[in-house]
Image 1 (tube, rainbow, N blue to C red):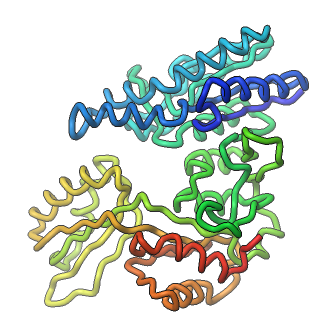
Image 2 (cartoon, rainbow, N blue to C red):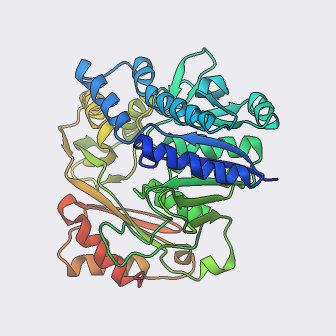
Image 3 (cartoon, one colour):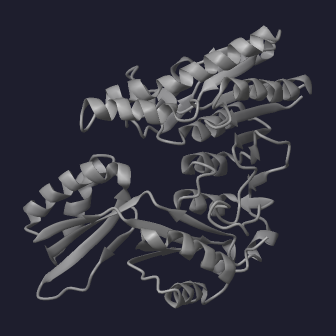
Length: 404
C-alpha cells in the first residue's frame, strides 16, 4: 500500500463534470490499494471573481478580510468532490485548511506554512477514508484564516505529502508535464521527462506556471518526488526530483517568461551608503517582494535605482517608494507595466561558458533591447519590452536546440 497525495488545479475541477472525472481518477488510485489524500483548488475563474469583488469594494483591501473572501472558492470544491465520492459509496471527508490544521505565519495573502498536524488525517486514512483538503489556505497561531498566495494549492499538496511522508505527490493540471517552454507560444516545445528541484525552482520563480515556487522549495527540502501530470489524459508526465548526472549534460533545459512584472525607477538618488536599504526596507516591511535590481553608475553624486515587483504589488509599491523617495530627496519616481522577463535555465550552465553571450546575441539580431539583466549559477534573465515576449521565447528556444 502506498500513500498518494494528489492535487487538482482549477481547470481540472472547473465544472461539475470535471469534478466527477477527477473523482473517478481518485477512485482508481484508491481501488489499487492506496491511501489517498486529495488537495483541490477553487473552480477555474472563481478566485479571480472573488479578487474582483474585493477590489470593487476598496482600492486596497484589508489583508485579513481579503483572505477571508478569497479562501471561499476551495470550500465549494472540497464539498462538491466529497459529496460525489460519497454518492458512489466511498468514504470521504473534507477539510478546510484550518481544520487540518495547517499552521502558517500571519503574512496574509502570502502566508508561509510553519507546521501541519496530521493526526486527524492519519486517523481518517486508517479508517478507509479518502481525505479531501482545501488547498491555498491555513490558519495562523491567533486563529486567523490565511492564504498562501496564488498557486498556493501546489504548496499545500507538497507540504501535506512531506508531513505524511507520502510515497509520491501527483500534481494534476491542464498540461501533461513540464515543457521546454510554453507550448502556446512555441509549437516546437517538448515535454521534459524529468527535471531537478533547482531547475524547477528557477523555472517556477521565472514565470513557468506549472508549479508554484514554494511547493518546489518544500519538495527539495523534504525530498518529495512531484509527478506533474494532466487530469485530462493518462499520459506519463514530468518527474521533479533530485539532480542526477544526466541532467548536467543539458546546457539549457527551458525558456521561461513572465509578463506579470512591473518596473519602478527612482531617479536622481543621492549616491551614498544606506540608500538602497532606505528604498527597499519599507517594501520588505510591507511583504512586497523585489525581484531584479539595477543601480546605475554615479554621475555628479547621483544615481538611478531600478527594481521590479509583480504587477499586483505595483500600486502599493509605488505609494511606498514615493514616500521613501521624498525622505532620501530623490528627484523622481517612474514606473512601467509594459515589460516582461525572459529567462533561460539549465544545470549545464555551471560548466559551460558563453551561454549569456549567445542569449544576448540572438536577442540583438532580432532587435530586442535588454533593459535589465540578472544571473545565477543556472539561469540568465533579462527584462525586455512586453511586445517582444513571444518572439524572444521562440528565438531563444531555437538557439539552444530545445525543439521537439
